[in-house]
Image 1 (cartoon, one colour):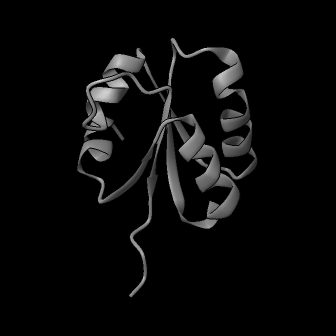
Image 2 (cartoon, one colour; image 1 turned 180 degrees about the horizontal axis):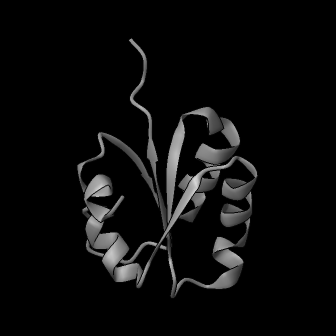
Length: 88
């Protein structure tokens, strides 16, 4: 799955703090995690570990700038995640 899935996702988190919160509080609704290869190791380490522990797909993106653009923001993003739609 490519960045197109992230671009068109109805629900997503953007940034390391929001991705960690989603993994901690709502791990059952996180489908996929995106990580920028140029992000600082200390920023992404726990996110990668948590995603692996939960058996989630991790997609690596070349740069934070590319990931930020895919998320629809004008700044870089270290991580992002696609979330399931909320149940009615």
